[in-house]
Image 1 (cartoon, rainbow, N blue to C red):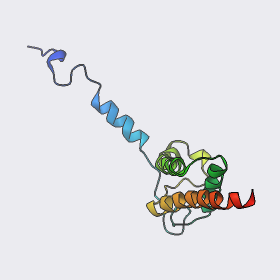
Image 2 (cartoon, rainbow, N blue to C red):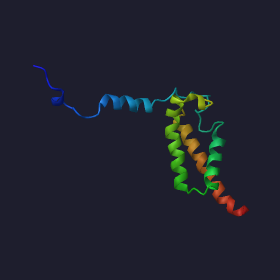
Image 3 (tube, helix red, strand yellow):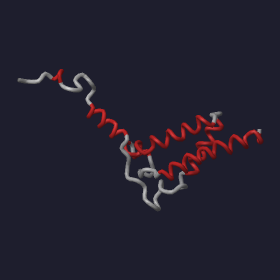
Image 4 (cartoon, helix red, strand yellow):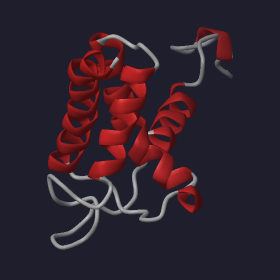
Length: 122
């Protein structure tokens, strides 16, 4: 006798394998940067750009919490973006943890230095 699909476990629920596949695709990352490559070290040629982003955050009047949340959010989505849209990045390798920490601290340093020194010049 044929079993009715509605009696099977998980009937009527979203297909778990589809959700798992979608999540894995969203979290896919490119090859990890290796020693000597951009995106490997604590500081690389893009550290100054991250510092500049922190400066812009401060000039826009964003507070510390918003600045750090934006910096962390970017570091979380950056590697999956590199896997899905590599053409918008000059170097498609995934950031190492040390590089992501350095990038985040550079944003915060740019924000902090601008917030501290800007009132002196105004």
